Length: 499
Ligand code: AHR
Image (cartoon, rainbow, N blue to C red; front, side):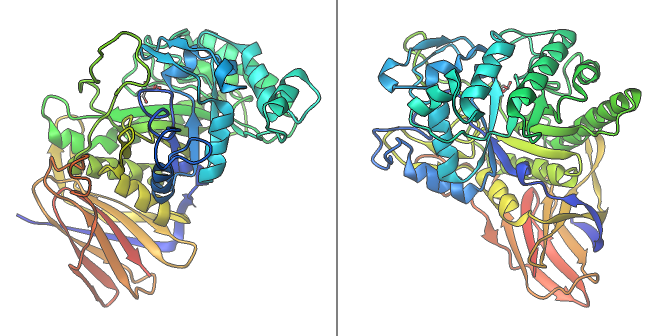
């Protein structure tokens, strides 16, 4: 059995420029993402700021452009003041979101140093769960006001003379979720988000802030749609983005639907955009609200989440999913959807960055290594820059329980700034390999190089076998009369560079 698929594109027909913020990631105070993930002062590779150099190196290779912080569910109970000033004076607190003790040895100042060291944009979330407008204003003034006030001078007294200039802010996190500390109704949240947004803009004065209102925590939330409608009715003129979060895992052994997870992401995006644009029309606004897809990934939510010898532990192993080759292919397909829809999804965050459902794993005092999902992200961030092109595709389909018939080929083409074109292509069929023909007659196809990630379904990279799964050069390529022909293995992620 063998599939044949064909795609064509033309650099004159474009979708949108790839926004820099599409390749964001996420660092939450959760498990070992911060402590013994990015921050471990006693680690042999730690720099003067306590950041692990081995992890920093992998983060640079991964290529995130922006990082959301400090949560996630954590932020809804967080007092940001606990994490600034002399470390010996910082209080230990109960973190109700994850049932742990937070030491506060890492906070806003350390996060900003981390962002500068890696070269990423910060995306800061405020607590609209247990706290509200005033504390958000205090935090904003501490972070962004130059000097001459209580909070700005406090920052300077902590050694940061220059304001942080954080432009991108999340107004709370998943406020629709019953698991959220301080969960709110859409009306309550819409009101407080609008008030917070308007007051932050008063302090800012630059006219250059980008604010994210919380959308639904998933497409399956009971109030999906109604939530966005109500929240945006309150915030339409005061915010820039509405958020979306989505995590995927196989359910009841239904692997075909899992391979087609990007279908759900597309329906989610379509639904949010339709609601947002309808609110805009109702309010007779010229403005467009875009999506910040600020949590997305594969997540085995029912995987055991680490043992606990004691209650309220510090930085225990939580959500340390180990990803398979199959997971990496699904993950790559999600990236393809984000690229294909980047006209309206103009920010996104892979949740999360290190150890917690993450592309990078570490051992305390030990090594750091790449999970299978590391590779699609690194390749997309490196080669998926420029302009997304309209792709016409002709693909065989496979049957899924959740989404009906789904094309086996999932692809996107990006015209890169250097004149080359990169096609990302996933063969979503678990069993059947595919011959892909790319009609490249609209461009000069010179050199074609293909990198392919595939493998046994369950193959994983672990502490003891860190490099088992990695992309490899795919030599099954021919170029003839403007047509590129490539063999895509079943269940594979492929990066096709046409120079
Ligand atoms: O990323 C893990 C958790 O998933 C986040 O804390 C929360 O926002 C979401 O439910």
